[in-house]
Length: 524
Image (cartoon, rainbow, N blue to C red; front, side, top):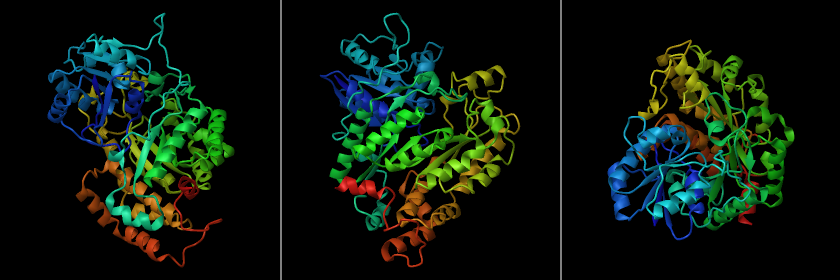
């Protein structure tokens, strides 16, 4: 049987990193079946194109995974596939919580022949075998013999053949930057971000988050050896391609067990398995100096920190009181001293937010080392404690907001400002953080660092700018390049001719990109 695993875009924004679930299920598929992967973010399709594809390629089963922000597109594609006569099984956090919606049991149209609830590591092989016999069940739940929910162990994690998978579609580098990067360092013909997980689960239970409900509050880890071997495989591929591969550890809290994380990072260093990596880590866990040392030494370059708010009252309201806004600056300085920078995430529209929250937040951000601030709105996702609280209070304005995805749009009424004011605050945050002036200031803030660090922050800001301001075509990129021409000219000039008056930072010996020691090992 020929199986298609499809990850939809949402028709509005696009991701630049492939989703891990497709590669994982491909590795877990029983022998004798062919699996094709399509990520709608890299290969956009409409319903007609998808129906034509499954017919022409004789697809026997389609698996679709989607989070809430992608579910409307997922349903439309599933409808087109089923109309073409091909069965569809759907899974992921949204379908797990609203299985009746996907199966048409809530009075709406049916979108799936079957749903996989929760983590599908153990149920996927059963689904494939049932589909091959023409005996698909409606619901596949990961339960033990006693009918109790079962979470898969990650100790015998499957090997994903990253050395053989076609990743051409996920090259992140626009062609316009090739000449600049070739001047700065070798091996930058390609750049891809690859998802890797080292563990699952989170015990924190933040009110707005789906993670604890889906993965549970009990943390499960892969063996260190398994993770290290995967990194070595990716590093070998980068060396063969003369390109760059960065890893995004998609664990919901990479350092939730600090002792274990330190052991993993030491093993990565000992095996010389360092690659550039990004991970999500709570600010409270980054008080540990040794952990920060190991993050830097093992190849860590960016840390995603869900700061959410600079207001302790807001944090307490959403069950994230372990975040301490007073220590945000110290945490970021601790990382920056090791040339590790932060993606700082903020949520506006919380119950204690008032107009001007964006500028108050930016006043703090401007005192921190340069990073990548991102801004969103408090969103009640289905089945979360937040959704239930707002529903009970009669504050939801779009009860099924996911059926018509609108990016950066409130689905409930804030307490202390209007919906329109909340939207304006998000716009203010993005506009003032990703203007040409803001990008130039971020680059200048690293004036005492090697050129590569400033190119790094500039390119990262350009890419993150696209989260809010669409940059999906060549004309959009050309417009942004024109707006930032002074900064681009400055960086190119230094790359080509050098810079005589550039301040030197302690220990600096040359003009290399961040993590040049990792690159050197990759080329060895």
